[in-house]
Length: 86
Image 1 (tube, rainbow, N blue to C red):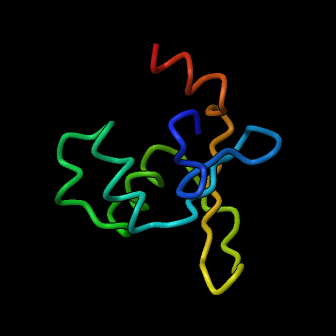
Image 2 (image 1 turned 120 degrees about the vertical axis):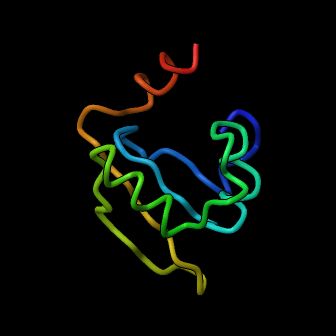
Image 3 (image 1 turned 90 degrees about the horizontal axis):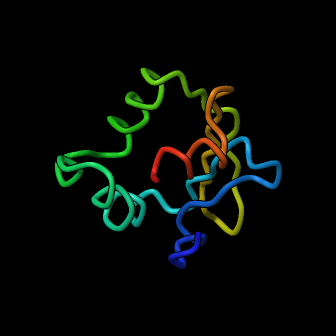
């Protein structure tokens, strides 16, 4: 979010889940920063990776003709994500 990507991906209000707002931009602009092989990945394979890592898709909702995916893992939140990046 600090890099101006909140229109693509952001934390939920309680900071316990994250929302992918634009899957195409997420794949092109966010994943390459964290995954070396991201140029070969599509959203379905990334969803499978999230499932393997213990994330559950808790919600898909439509807003302004767009589909938003909300992902949650009880062991992962904004604080733990920030610590893992440092």
